[in-house]
Each structure stands twice: as C-alpha cells, then as structure tokens.
Image (cartoon, rainbow, N blue to C red; front, side, top):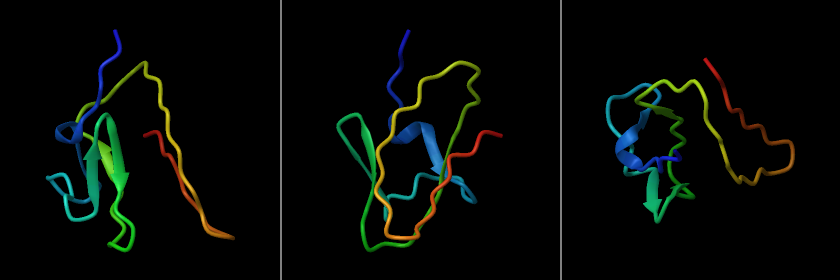
Amino acid sequence: MIERLDASRWRAWHGDEFPIDCWRAAGDELQAIAGTRRVDLISRERYRDFVLRLEFALPVAGNSDCVKT
C-alpha cells in the first residue's frame, strides 16, 4: 500500500510544527519556498520500507543531504 505523505506528517527538524513560512503543500508534493529561511523536514513517523522520490536543484558547489537515521 502506498500512502501519500502530506504536510501534517512532517515537522521542522528542530521544531514541533510544519514550517508553513518555508514550505508549502502543492497537490501531493511538498515544496520549499524560494527566498525563505532554510528549514529541514523530518517525518513524524518512522518507516521501515518506503519509496522516496524527490527532485531538487542546487547552485554550483551546492550541497544537499537525505539522511537516514
């Protein structure tokens, strides 16, 4: 069974709520809002088996991480 993960299932890395000033839900996607502060997201639940699909763009010499803890 594939579940869609909406904004209610995510929170800020060092916070308790979804950072609506930095991220937006658009359909079944979560999108970072350009020009706002950078806030990493973490799921509210732990998952054993999952499929992660993401798209991102980085500036020259940029860095982005997906971390499994």
